[in-house]
Length: 229
Image (cartoon, rainbow, N blue to C red; front, side, top):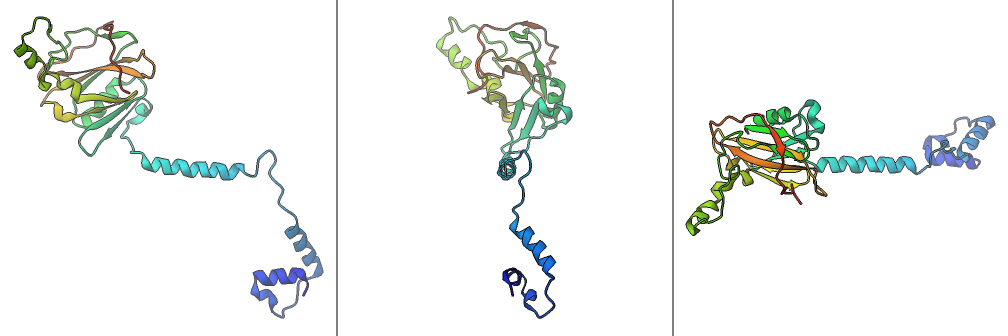
């Protein structure tokens, strides 16, 4: 038994049987195939494919850790809405477009909303609706008595600030527990004008039974609150 026969026998025990051995020509061809290393593909590094496969596996693993948002049709690139287990609703706004679609999606989550996107440096004129708290039309705090100031600072007078709270540059969380029956969450967005801001927004609560009129853009207030960290 020559060297090649011993190699074959090590792989397949049946090769050690007393059947007729392969012809010398077959042995020579097999020896040539075994001895010749595969030629690398033209223009590709032999390490490139394993690296891409590893990246794909890592990407799948990362995707498994991310909550899948509930999105709607062609607006998926514009916004995403996720219902959290605690009853809050997380909203990510990537593009300031399709406000009606976002309103419709929030409605399916039990939230009546009026969404407006304005140009940079603009906001909706006051008087569109009757505010449910002091956030929409706050009184002048000058010359307030201590008792008036105490009443003014009650959390219930500022529910609008709690019902929609930003958590980063393009995401905010709605807490429906701060809304009362038949109130409307009014959201006014405009492009951010500070570093790290995708947009700025003004959240308000419209009083139950108060219709929300269309937005009439005016110059924005000089002070713009950041959307998040």
